[in-house]
Length: 184
Image 1: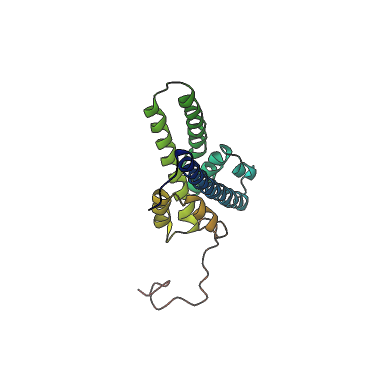
Image 2: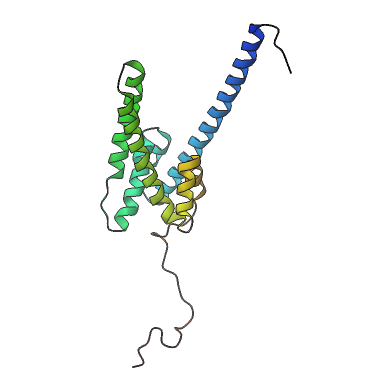
């Protein structure tokens, strides 16, 4: 067992470990940010959404994520406003975080708004994943919620042809007996 000679040696070692861990976490978060930005940018460009560059702006990316989900829902005949909801909750969560640090603001209210924002973010992730990876959308969503891998999955599915934009499958063979013809 190692014994420290004095308190100063212990504190130097302690803060070195803390700084190293924080540096690793910061690097991972930056990599996730870049991966999600590349994925959202590419998906927005493929869908013809104006202002795809918003993928690189922190609150703008929430709007872009919602816009992509809105377009997918519109293709299914639903009129949702995920872009507006995510933009509002993103701005409110940001300002609540700032005000909670500056003033004695109710922390529970801030946490509640962040949870609601996360719910709509995961709904938007699911909308994107269900058209780009329909067989694994639920698995990817669960892993995104539990492990925080949503940005990795958005990056991974960016080059797949979405099912709502893919051409219908062509059948080169004639229909089998009883399929396509009425023999009665």
